[in-house]
Image (cartoon, rainbow, N blue to C red; front, side):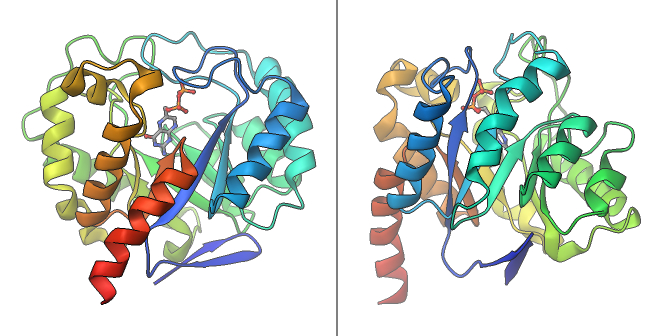
Length: 274
Ligand code: HH2
């Protein structure tokens, strides 16, 4: 199995690690650390040295309660960094839900669009169809400002699965080939702890669409709810969650801590292939 990702073709035999780079003032873990361009670039290069298979750059926080940044502000944060990352030896993904940002990011060399709204913005499927980038279609119930206010589901896994299937169909109808797609259940995006746990336990049921699963659990508040630790102190639970996600079929792990995640996955992988 391969993921087509711009000029890259990523083999999915072992779980891949996507390193997170937030050039935002307010992301829940690394907000404010990489608003300086030089600091952002240094962090991207460090993650690649540590073994990141992709780097995901985000310029708008989507943490629960976050206020949307304006489109101009998102572009002002993103573009100077993105232009300097074009030569990175791994694909650069851009975490955005805005069509204008997608277009400019792709023109500047982004190889993947990671959209927490699963290309639901009018014109989004067409904007990415015109390129050869990979796409992440993520499930989110509601929007970041209000999504954690008492989210309700019947069977969360079936609802998320049906949503992802419909977004795969919409993407394909717009001309985006299946081998360019990944799907993501969207841990923490309009989900209570019980929903997140149910999704992790039954993650394998979402792999039935033949599209690789991307999963982001790194440092998230569900890990805080379980351990009582602050975001700064959630490395160990994040590693545990990444391993469990891999065990349940995740093919791409979106993480803040690349080196530690790669090391943990190497042990898991060694046991699998021994
Ligand atoms: N989680 C976050 C942002 N983007 N994209 C995908 N596909 N899956 C995720 O789980 C996901 C995501 C939230 O994490 P982070 O970027 O660290 O925080 P913030 O949204 O506050 O910038």
